[in-house]
Amino acid sequence: MMDGIMNCDGGMMMWGMGLFWLLILIVMLLTAAALVKYLFFNNRRRKGREGD
Image (cartoon, rainbow, N blue to C red):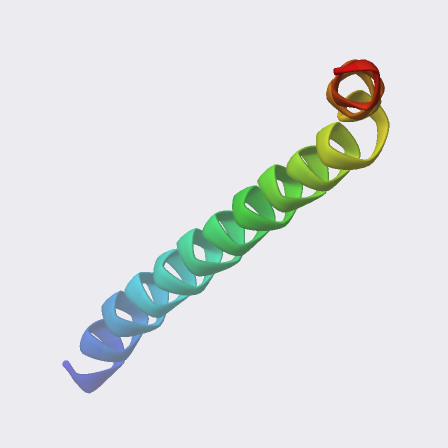
Protein backbone atom coordinates (compact mmCIF):
# COMPACT_ATOMS: atom_id res chain seq x y z
CA MET A 1 0.00 0.00 0.00
CA MET A 2 2.75 2.48 0.88
CA ASP A 3 4.56 1.56 -2.32
CA GLY A 4 1.62 2.76 -4.43
CA ILE A 5 1.44 6.06 -2.55
CA MET A 6 5.17 6.65 -2.95
CA ASN A 7 5.00 5.97 -6.69
CA CYS A 8 2.15 8.44 -7.15
CA ASP A 9 3.86 11.14 -5.09
CA GLY A 10 7.17 10.64 -6.88
CA GLY A 11 5.45 11.01 -10.25
CA MET A 12 3.78 14.24 -9.22
CA MET A 13 7.07 15.61 -7.93
CA MET A 14 8.73 14.71 -11.22
CA TRP A 15 6.01 16.52 -13.19
CA GLY A 16 6.34 19.54 -10.91
CA MET A 17 10.10 19.74 -11.36
CA GLY A 18 9.73 19.29 -15.11
CA LEU A 19 7.21 22.13 -15.27
CA PHE A 20 9.44 24.32 -13.11
CA TRP A 21 12.47 23.82 -15.38
CA LEU A 22 10.32 24.36 -18.47
CA LEU A 23 9.20 27.73 -17.08
CA ILE A 24 12.82 28.63 -16.23
CA LEU A 25 13.87 27.72 -19.79
CA ILE A 26 11.10 29.88 -21.30
CA VAL A 27 12.09 32.85 -19.12
CA MET A 28 15.75 32.45 -20.11
CA LEU A 29 14.87 32.29 -23.82
CA LEU A 30 12.66 35.37 -23.61
CA THR A 31 15.39 37.25 -21.72
CA ALA A 32 17.98 36.30 -24.34
CA ALA A 33 15.62 37.39 -27.15
CA ALA A 34 14.99 40.74 -25.46
CA LEU A 35 18.73 41.26 -24.97
CA VAL A 36 19.48 40.48 -28.63
CA LYS A 37 16.70 42.82 -29.75
CA TYR A 38 17.98 45.60 -27.50
CA LEU A 39 21.62 45.21 -28.57
CA PHE A 40 21.19 44.73 -32.32
CA PHE A 41 17.92 46.40 -33.29
CA ASN A 42 18.06 49.54 -31.13
CA ASN A 43 20.61 51.28 -33.38
CA ARG A 44 17.96 52.75 -35.70
CA ARG A 45 16.50 54.90 -32.94
CA ARG A 46 19.90 56.16 -31.83
CA LYS A 47 20.83 57.20 -35.37
CA GLY A 48 17.45 58.89 -35.87
CA ARG A 49 17.80 60.94 -32.71
CA GLU A 50 21.32 62.11 -33.52
CA GLY A 51 20.02 63.93 -36.59
CA ASP A 52 17.25 65.71 -34.70
